[in-house]
Length: 150
Image (cartoon, rainbow, N blue to C red; front, side):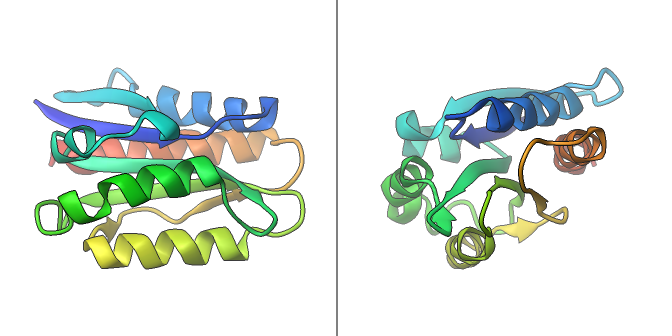
């Protein structure tokens, strides 16, 4: 069975709604043979990442950058996972009230260094997530999970 790891930092109701939509998409009954594991960014370990076959990263954009929690988690796993996770699919979602460009650039830099393959467009939400925003989060989770079925 393949494993999708959803790494998230959810300090607000808006981030929580987005996270839940991603999980709902990833666990859709039509997606078979994929175990979905959720991990809070601050508790992320190299073994979590090494045991997974794909990833979804979720973060608020704080002061124009990814959350400190997600940055910490990625710092912890970067070198231990550098050569062992290349080519694995990933996606990401961001919530920001004043721009997410720095957070997007940071995630892109780190995942490029790890050699992960972007498998879906980033989902970027400002303010309260709309129905369309939550559907995009659902699609993100479903898309990355479905990549693991193939």
